[in-house]
Amino acid sequence: MANYTPNYQLHQWEPEDPFLRTDFNEDFQKIDAALKASGDCHFVYGSYVGTGTFGASAPCTLDFSGILPEAPKMLLVRRVIGTYNYLLVLRGMESTYLSSQTTYSNEVAYLTWRDTSVSWYVEKDADLQMNIEGESYYYIAFA
Image 1 (cartoon, one colour):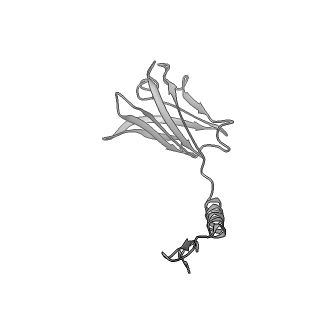
Image 2 (image 1 turned 30 degrees about the vertical axis):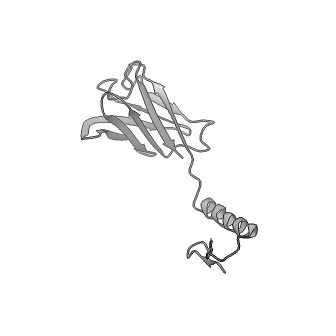
Image 3 (image 1 turned 45 degrees about the horizontal axis):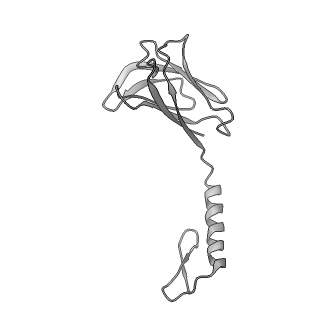
């Protein structure tokens, strides 16, 4: 007869145990319920092409309406080639120092969170704002 896992009581068969479809179905129902109870995590990823603008009058904005079921909680934006700057922010932050793979910058990105979107700007230049004209930027947002 099968042993069971300690946390979810899933079947752990011994070599001589027969496999029953009902055992698999029971295990899958337990796994499904455990995943649902742990909370759904939704994410979306994509890209945009920079316009070359920067500053408070020209923020970058990503709008997730119709894509995520709720407001994003975390956002990561990264340019794959060139400089190693990235933007990693959590919902509720109003500003953050820009980061790179090797160091923190003293440049600040100012953030605005809305129901379905997040905007940011940097006052110094388009590179730091993740908005160099014609360059591709990639993002992932979690809700």
